[in-house]
Length: 232
Image (tube, rainbow, N blue to C red; front, side, top):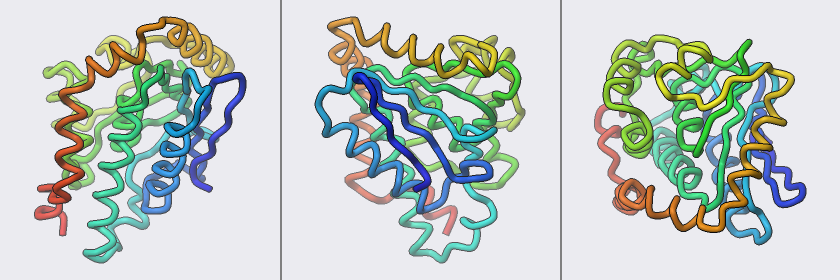
């Protein structure tokens, strides 16, 4: 399974596990959607962390597989990307990304769809590399980036595709805390469980994200992402 889900003492851990780089293809998107649906339906979950297995967080679109998809598979892929990013963005409790390695393209979008980000000083990297890969952005990832990045940062990263290390990402207010890799998961768990103690977290998060989520739902309901015209 490309995405695993573990729950312990009210804390859920979603782990991307598609070696070697946890890259995104149809199987990955379907697995993440299923895990997020399960998580949202469960009671007793107060917070979540999202991380990657191995040395990568998520390397974005699987460029060894996805370019070979036929038109129908590409339509499925785009629809799934929109659904998974929206579902992650809409989780009602605290969600902290534990960025253990490269978060590139769609991988960075998934990190930004979490509420906060803790990064491993040694290995975390961030980039919006679609400009180099010549792949347009689906509509929901664009909304995530518009809602979570300062406009000047978004312009810089989307148009240059440059790679930031953990310290560079912190300077651009992408990362909230930088820790040694051995302390990463503990730091993310501590942050998530501390945030979950606030009784109004879910209510205020829903208010904060309501405009973006309304736009996301409209995209998913219409099923006519403009990316499809450019990509297929």
